[in-house]
Length: 321
View: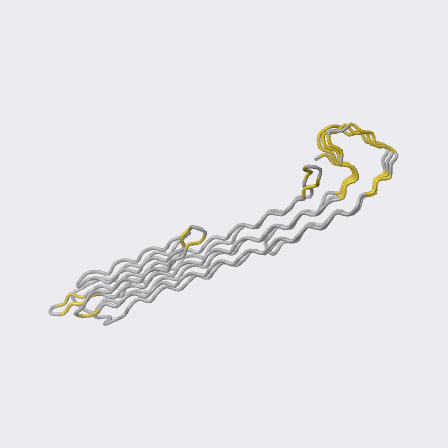
């Protein structure tokens, strides 16, 4: 490699070796499974109302995928409280509390809703057909890392049951179940490493006159394969609503299940190694009367299903980068 040089290269037989293959990318890590919501507490005739269950609590990379709290049972004659919505992308809505009244039977609280599962991460980009040069060395065209999937939303908390306020008979409603948390997303797979290339002559910011040479290049190395994205964690079930003395007092609804986390995206395949007779950046190259025998360009690295395969390396006699 010639840097900031003025040179004439003539009448030589130049033979370059083969490029080295790229490393394979790492596999992503699986997402954590969701946390189950807790059950609602019982209400009772001639007694107090039950508390709603707590939603499953889970943080994924600093963001909540927790389930919503279940609604408390209603005091005598009053409706149960509504359940809380879950947290996260597209969370499940909370259930409506059951109506209270002066006579039985009383309706149960509404179940909490379950959200959609988290989306999968986007695959990493393909390694290019050529990387570059830095400090006298070829820099490989690596594939990109797959993106993190989307966490699952938390399930909605269920509504609490209504309370009874009949003549000479009262009772508190049952608590609704808490929503299950969503699962955390899987992380993306690492990109495959770009392969080494084979170059006859390389000039950077140089003035070169290249005539009458025989220039043979070797084969470019094969790009490394992209790693697999990992699956997301499973969403957890919601807690059960209490049913004590139902339907004289309202039963609590069941908490919604959390959504599963999305899988991480696959890593992109590394770029195959180029095979180039004369490569230059900046400066000027005057080339004539040279004979070239180029090796095979390296194939791009594979990528798991849904990913981006690396590009085949560049194969050309003279290339300005």
